[in-house]
Length: 386
Image 1 (spheres, rainbow, N blue to C red):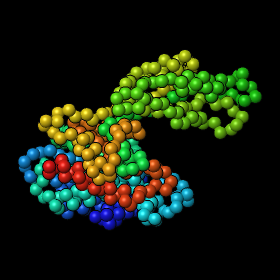
Image 2: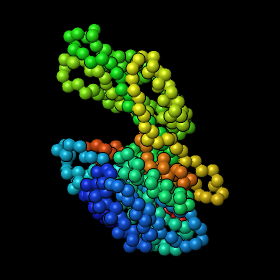
Image 3: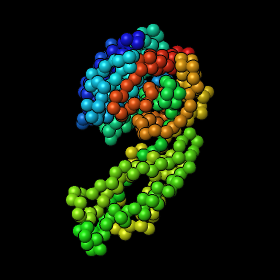
């Protein structure tokens, strides 16, 4: 099985699927799923490719286990700095190099091969096995999983369990898992001054100087405390820019880009209210625009009498396969779980080691592909057989 996982991972890496373009990845996956008699529904929107696929076992119950993932990757950066071409999928010393190796083509390959083995061995299993795959997770996510979920909700499709293959592991496969994520709020703040010559600064109003006291204040604020299973809310200034290129001109305005990763201890509207209040103390003339990338979500399922507890099942099988007890830490960026949670499904994120994702020389240990495959397979078996 490991050879099949490696070959599939390499085949996917060799597709230059820079978000939102799929570059043929989904055709590779769909071909395998069709051979297993999955029902495939393409939901392609503009440059984004999505599909919903499901396979029915018997009619004893209608529980659905979904694997969710994305075929798109971030740009490789400076290719000259890579040890190998990021889209060649080269193996060296039992390490597979390539953009998307961990985030998340390796996990996709492991999911697909685990599903193939399971259906081949247990064709009359209980319930339904499904996939939600998108090519717009690393981008703005407007035409990706959110669109698939909206269509499934309209059709009243019932999803019970969902494994998202995001690279959650820290040092060992399965040492960190997630059942939630913080929300993300993006701010574009324009500070308006008066343009002028640097030699006659008293005739101008320098927006860079104006913003320094504001930044000092913002950086000292504790926006919210830690909460159950969530880190505290964080604020990061990601870019400061102006349209002035000469070094002898005071700019008329500057633009700040700010991102908040907020937990369930504070609502995004309260962040905006507090931010505006502080800005007004320091800046007279400004313009602010904002965009909400996602609200925080937390998957906690209490009705264990009717359904199995996915979180316990994942923890148990990580321990069985990799002999560790995973920690539940809901940090990191956003994920498509923020859309899938609307279905009411139990959600756990479990994937490969994240130390090289989005970096030069992204890579995965060959043995890690085998471990994550075995864990996925055991989870499928426990939910749909036992």
